[in-house]
Length: 211
Image (tube, rainbow, N blue to C red):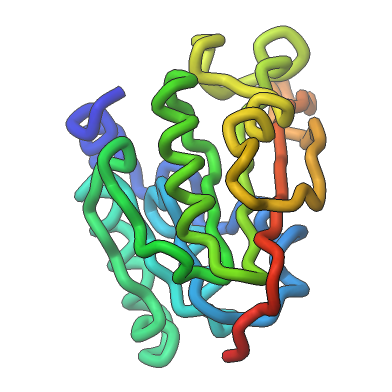
């Protein structure tokens, strides 16, 4: 889907993904000291807003102007000090180059691209990660097609933890965690089904910046 298609999708709904942060983002970041964060493919900013409320200064990047406008509206509900920690950037990640070595936390959450484009985006995300900083990649695992529900149905845009590690080989990052995870989603008929996610957390060696 291109930016126009995503604009239409976001325009047709109040919020597409809801306002709660991604469960794995919460699990992997709630113990980190706040600093500068970069949220790539931020959508309506649910993760960016959650981080900003916890003291992070967040740059949220997405190629959908409608999604970012939804994010700004959600931010307007927050106190001024939280709004002031947020920067919204309209950009296509296939061409966007974040500031190198500038971010203590970089999120790439549910960005699904063909393998070559994904590799380039992830390598630029790695380059943006500061010494001591964390790069967190989360998305639908390739196994979700046969073992889970929801998500993209094109196997060419799904990935495994191993794919992410291969994409980032030689980028100077240490692997903290690489795993396939399941989480419950509401099923039809009142039942519960599961989605299968890939999660990779990496760290750039070096002392973390303070503040």
